[in-house]
Image (cartoon, rainbow over all chains, first blue to last red; front, side, top):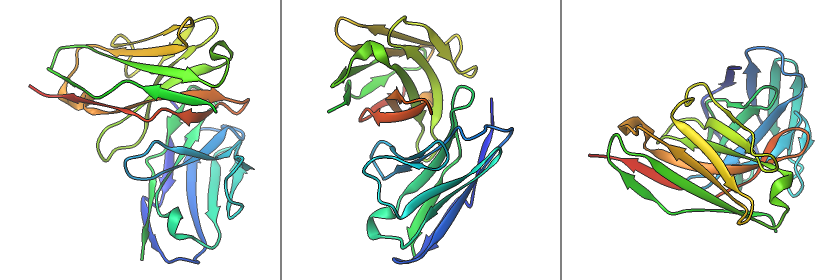
Length: 106
Length: 119
């Protein structure tokens, strides 16, 4: 299985902040990297696919970058509805998820 | 709209089996695979396996190989996940999700089914 490691595991931020979440794969996965947002008691929601493509309907303040083993999710101008847990997922070989990054209100 | 609706919560005793259903609507069921993912309380998402909606081929995570069986019924556009030899550590929310696009993303997801294993 391809291991996926996110950092940090949690962070505190304020409305309007810019933040970045990192995801590292245990081997090269090209751009087969997706990002999901999960709110408490809800199923995850797709944000970014193919490392940098924005899913339809997702605000443009979300962006993704990277290839190979290192990837980043960036949120510019954090909004109240963005406080959630974010997961990266590789779709290069079967599927594996990172451990999640919880974004909390400072 | 594309939708996946899962069966209701289950409570099972250790050693028993559970079968969760996932009914698809809003698209041609045989055109997409369905994945199963679980999430234990406070834990990360864990991929269990998937089924090709068209030919019924399956692939399972090594962790669950031998304990999980994923099937589908094309006449009702429903996928099923059966987990056997349940133990307390299997207490989790179980999700189905549609495989979407060439990037192999999960979109959409079902609402989740809580399985509780307790004596």
